[in-house]
Length: 258
Image (cartoon, rainbow, N blue to C red):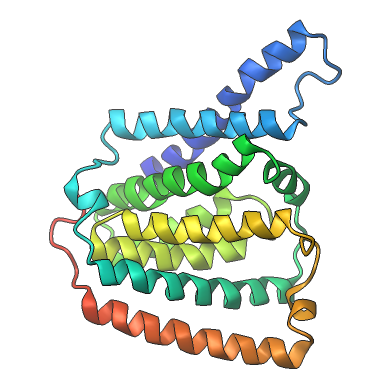
């Protein structure tokens, strides 16, 4: 567990290191408050740089091995079922998050990033790739080597994934979604289903932030509490059916973890 926590903390170090070139440029240009990255494009580039640093570390030290099994050997129908699986989960979890009404510390930063090319790439492409490699690949592999069973690996990786986000409004959502992503990795031995689900989640989130409905509540968009609860019920059924087929089609892959 200590190695898994260290690996997650290292990502924060990479994020800090990725800000240093921009801080240096601010100092050269005599920018007010040089330690602060307020420009969304700079912030997006910084996040992308931290992603590259972390991915390089994961691959160099072989926390993750991107072989054939890591990115392929998943039935195409499984990738198709990932779409309703994650969309239904997102709807239920967003309704749950809205009910919790937790403070959203990073909303302004994410909204700004979503309106720049570099920020959009960081949210939609960089985050799904590096976070799946880190939390599903690196963390779950380390937990497996430490003797943790499948359920413990999935739960602990999801918990670290949730806490990693820091933002109170994201922690419950990330934890619960992390359970699904961890389960998919355990069942398939591939990072691809998780990356696809993560991509769908982040892409839709970025589209919402760029739209005129960025500040709208789900209950208002649905037309009230009654329609929202009906939507949650339908989404729960879709999720249950999708999960049933996923469990039926997928068998635990021997040698998933190395």
